Image 1 (cartoon, rainbow, N blue to C red):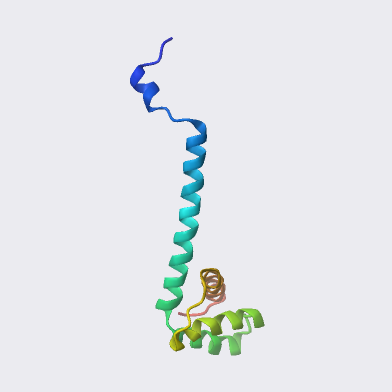
Image 2 (cartoon, rainbow, N blue to C red; image 1 turned 90 degrees about the vertical axis):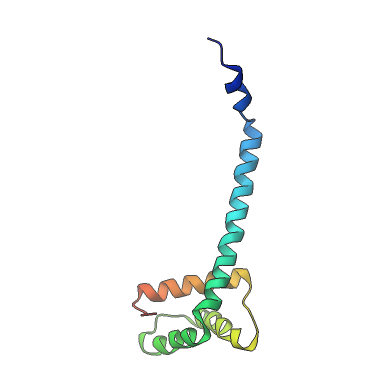
Length: 103
């Protein structure tokens, strides 16, 4: 059985495919970090303060979590959390929502 020449030309080298997949994963990680930063800023410091207030009666957040939320509140003073910090802050928000935080 002989393969069509057009088909053979469409085939890509396995190394190229693996390389493309690796670049795609790196790109997606970068996108996720940037989206987390945008979400932290868009959620707003008033809502981050509301989360701290909510936690005073629900006791869901750890001391470390509260430190990260305070970083998000610092947006008002022109301080933006790093990409890694933003990912953690969004995880804390999601955890709080699971525990019934309404915002």
